[in-house]
Amino acid sequence: MAYKELCSLCKGNGYITVVVKGQDEIKQCWLCESKGEKEYSQAEVDDFIYKTYYKKGEKHANKSKNR
Image (cartoon, rainbow, N blue to C red; front, side, top):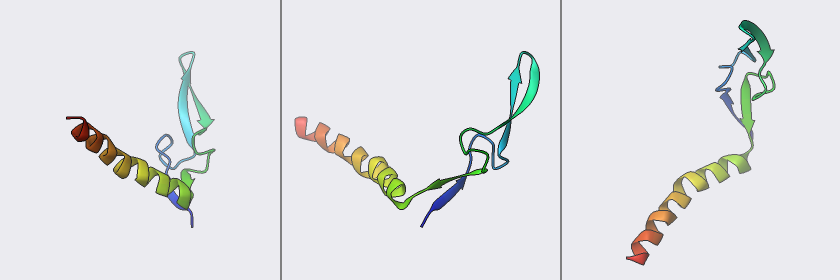
């Protein structure tokens, strides 16, 4: 199962406006490859949760052991 979120760069539009030599140019979003959203696999979601919540707890646990 894939998880999706709106692209934070183009806000779901698939295109962004870039200023080049003082002029606005419309470019395809390179972050989401012009899809408007980013997809994450279950493994990526699990890894994010682990790094965010469990690794954070280990830092505090290691500090208290050293005291």
